[in-house]
Amino acid sequence: MANHRPKRSRRCVAATGAAAASLGLLAAPASAEPAPQSVDHRAVVLVNFRNLALADPQKAHDQAVRNFFGATDSLASYYADNSGGRLSIVPAKGDGVFGPFTIDMDDSAACDTGKMADLARKAIPDVTYDHISVVMNTKFCSEWWGLGSMPGPKTWFHEGAVGDKAAIVHEAGHNLGFAHQERHLCPAGTFTACTADGYSYRTPMGAGGEKKGLTAPELLSLKWLTAQQVTTPSATTSVHLTPLHAPGTSGVRAVDLPLGTGGDRIVVEYRTPDAATADRDVAQGVDVYQVPGGHYDRAIMISNVKRDDKTGTGSFSTGGGALVDTSAHLSVSVTQTTAAGADVRIQLGDDAGTPPTGRPTTPAPSPTGPATATAKASHSPTPAVPPTSDQSDDHTVIGSTFNPVPDGTTPGTRAGDGVLASTGGGATGAGVIGAALIAAGGGAVLLVRRRRTHRKH
Image (cartoon, rainbow, N blue to C red; front, side, top):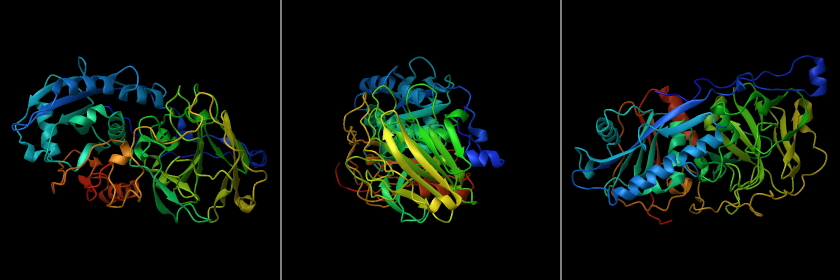
């Protein structure tokens, strides 16, 4: 089965020698060489329960064909754009959508996702696939709208979710190993002693919807940035960042730095809205991420400014200021931003305590994007509490309009599903998922969920 997730965290090689230090030369991480091209064969299986069929199987079929495999505005086109053509998602056979098949289960057992997947697999014995998605209609299991093994080969969707491109892209992200991406509010002087401040709004994995590209840490986790696009300063210097998803392959797209000596890292990116790229609807700004233990797929966006629910802006306020970690002797600040790029000041060692000269200019709108980049799109309002709270649900993460039905059920798991990251009534934050993976050694079968909410979106 195709595996697109790196097995180990990246390591960086800094420039060495007095000359390199004095010139502030930039060295790319050694493992930033791009991942090879791969083909992901996907099968979407429509299933009926013995006592409950799909409401509109033809509509579900047509939506699945278009939203999974369409040439534009689909799961396939999304990951082709974000991977620079390194990942091709194609139908496993024919148009990639099979059924509907009536499986030997009642709707009352719909939360036994493992059994459902087994029966769906047996319904297509002559189809070879890398990932399988099961689509069903249930009135019983309403804890989630979409569910994905993380990382793993399986996703599950309510019938209406095949029309929700944000849900499809989000769950496929879990298959690739991405956790839900949080935003943390950090006090002065630290990048780690921070508190949850909702989701990042910079990626489909953090409430951004399918009109935002993946973040630099997510791209790094799959080696979808080249060595030439990633820099690691060895001394205090300024870096000109090209917008992360700008066309072409030239220009520095991310700064990747060690944070202290414990294995954590810091990644810096610049995002601008551009209708011709994966970042069709992203707020312009420089983003800073803390990468726990070098696990890029569990990166957390950090800021010293509380998140603005209306714009979902970057890590820095318009008025400027630096993000500083005094114990790591590291400071990041923005000196200028335009539609074409951002100048970011990286201060290391004793320089980290010195205020940067100059102030950032007001971001200029991208000529190809909206004049005012907002996180509106089609998603619901931002959750008012951090994603680890049991008061919000992951519909706001993916931007669906599904209303959970209180039924007191709990999604089930079976061996081989890995961590099941749910979208809907059951979801949790990146930190909880990461802790569970570490505690289990990556081998146990876990279900991460949160108490459901009854508010409507």
